[in-house]
Length: 353
Ligand code: DAH
Image (cartoon, rainbow, N blue to C red; front, side, top):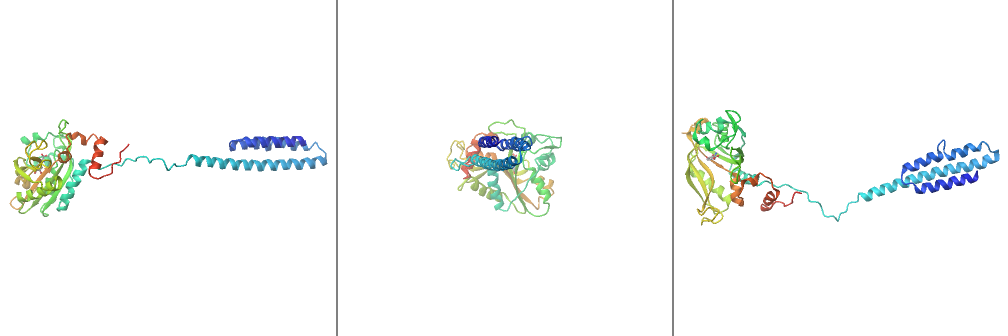
C-alpha cells in the first residue's frame, strides 16, 4: 500500500512537470482524484485493512490528496501566467520600426482653383451661389436669350433628358435663377462655380464634364469699366501682379456687348512665347454687359438696371497656370499627377500607398 502511494506521488509529479496547458492538468485531476481515479481506488482498498492500518494509510492517502490538489492549483496558476507572458511578448510594439505611411489626400487642382477664385470674389463682397446641374431648357437657354432653334445652341451640344430638361451646358442659367430670386431686392453680386456637361468627345482639350465659374453683377449705373476693373483685379490675383487684361469683341447671346478677355502672357510678360503662341496675350474668359432681353426675361427693367456677367473655365485656368496640356489629367485620378499639386501649394506630400 505504502509503495502504491509513493508510486502515485512520483507519477503525478512527473506528469505535472510535463503538462503544457490547463486542459491537460484538469484531465490529470480526473484521472487521479476523480471517482474512478487512482487515489479513489486506494481509498476503496482501505476497507479491507484492519483498524491500525486504516488509520496509518488513511492519513497518508489524505495527505496525498491534499498534495495533489495543491500541486494542480500551482501548476494551473503557472500555466496561466506563462500564457499571459507569451501573449504580451507577441504583442510587443517595436518602436524602432519606421512608421507606415498613412496616405493623406490633398485638394484637387480644380477645387484649388475654384477656392482661389471664390476667395477673391468673396473679399469683394460677392455671394457664392449654386444652381441645379439637371436644368430646365428654360433657364439653360430660353431666358438667356437663346430661344429654341437659335443657331448658338449648336455650339453647346447638350445631354437632353426630356425635351425640356437637360444637364446644364453652362453655369449661366444660375444668372437667371439668381435674378428671379432677388427680384427688386437690391443689387446682385454673385459667383457660381459648378459642374457643366456637353456632348463632346473627350480629348486633350475637351471633356464631356467640366467646370465653369459664372459671375454676375446687377445694379444701377453699372458699366463696362466696372467689369474691366473687376477682371483686372482677378487677373492679377490669379496670374500674378503686373498682369494686364484686354477686351476683344466677342459674341454671346446673353450679353451685349460681348467680349473675350485676354491676360498678358504670364510666361513671357507679353514679348511672345510658345505659351501665348507669340501673341503676348492669352484668352481666359468670356464676358459682357447683361443683354436687355435677359433682364426683361428675369423681371428686371433694363432702363433702371444694368449689369455685367462673365464665365470662365477653372480647367483652362489651372492648365495655363500649371502648364498642363491634357484636360483628362484632372479626371483620371493618377496620384502622381494629383500629388504634384499638394507640393506646389505647400501641402503635405504624403504618398498614398
Ligand atoms: N456661358 C458661356 C459659355 O459657356 C461663358 C460666358 C460668356 C458666360 C460670357 C458669361 C458671359 O456669363 O457673360 O461659353
